[in-house]
Length: 296
Image (tube, rainbow, N blue to C red; front, side, top):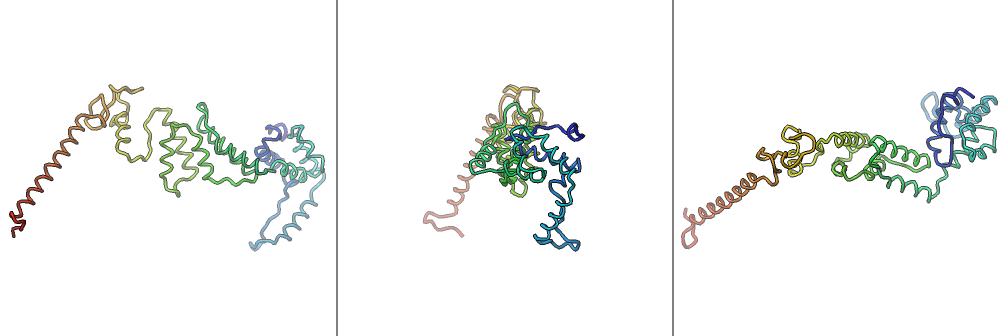
């Protein structure tokens, strides 16, 4: 058993895990100094910084492939074979060249027709976060699915990942999602969304009020009524109506929307506005004589 085999253990290649397997397998070969047997390093720029033409790159690649030693090639091929399930071994029979083996495996597992592409996209956009799943695990699951799509040759943008992350969340995250919809596009980055979702999970776990940019007075006041002006629950733990502190009068037992002092104050405001309007109307009438001619 080689050093890399004993120190790097991961699931062998099957029909469903090529994306993850290829990434880990590449790391194993790089660490063993064997990646050059698969993809010899060929620079695409000249010493003066200019791009090389395609024919020059092809010639240099051919020369690098010819320079490989048989011993190193066999070692690289062996590392690959040792990490395949039995059903994948037939792909290695076509050649003793590890580069050919690698490219065959790549072509087989990346072959994504319309139906496969559709199924992957559907799973990516319809996956749902389970109640027992942590936000960190949920984000990792979406990132892994995005990586699989990319490995299958399907472009996945950050916007696609944001959609998948938010569409699979439970209703308790609706307020945060609404806030995302109102966030300027230049600020709505994938890292911003991930950070907000992780913070929201902590907030929900601790029972703190939502810290969104909701500008609705009623929404804001209701939240503050529950927590009190100091941002703490009036009674600690689960808040009953008897412990609710009104944001308008600072008394317990009701919300601001039901506050009798607030209702009386608003009623007096309306009455005062009507009295003022009537007074102004009477003053305007006094400025005219009976014939409708104004006094000057």
